[in-house]
Length: 282
Ligand SMILES: C[S@@+](CC[C@H](N)C(=O)[O-])C[C@H]1O[C@@H](n2cnc3c(N)ncnc32)[C@H](O)[C@@H]1O
Image (cartoon, rainbow, N blue to C red):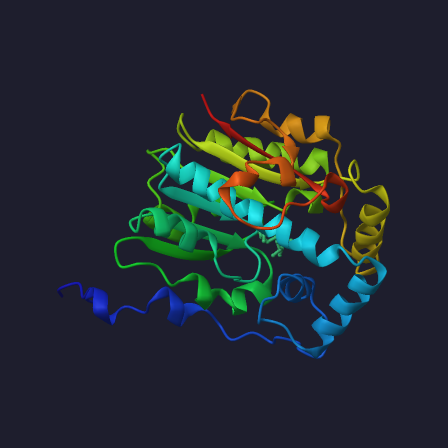
């Protein structure tokens, strides 16, 4: 009997395969609280109440969250405009908050391709907003944990969207503070190992160097919610780039990483709580 293969238009799209999840809107969720702090729309009363409590304790928290998000957009700009990168693997994507990484990259070249990865079912439930690619480009969402790089690298959506034979950018923005050094370094090394020379690592990581008191507030909030978190010194963040060629200006506080690439507010060192670095695999 002849093998039947469904025509492309008959196959379910990735959007159709995203399951409906229990959004648990009656309780605050870290990703939605972060969305609220960023001024996003994907949040509910419980998230807003939790966010307001953080702002009460630390009035600069909203500006700090916006700065943490804005550096992702500047890194994407520099990767696309200066380094010619057109493929992105973004692990720890978070809830969609415009502009998302693909909107920045495709604003520079509509043919850019982006694979988003997160392990949170709430992010998965909102992932449709990440699948709004230009017709020339492509985006995909993979529900996967950074701690399982083999599963991620073997995922058909990754292989079908990105060409691992050509340089791409691995972006780890605001995620490594959820993992200890012992856990995260081998994972980053494994992912970089799978990428060709000329690929980039873009990373931001939480620190207590610039604002120790605020960092303690944020750290305590995570601990109270049962979420582990690890703040790093500058040397601790530089370790992620061992063996790579660091782009200018090296590992610096996020407010100092190419601030000229956007017209957002200029924050002082004590108003941010993360380092940023971008480096090329030789
Ligand atoms: C603070 S948000 C950052 C979102 C986005 N990258 C940004 O900078 O706006 C961190 C995200 O990392 C995700 N995450 C944390 N640990 C993870 C893991 N082990 N694997 C995959 N995603 C993870 C969380 O679910 C969350 O959505």
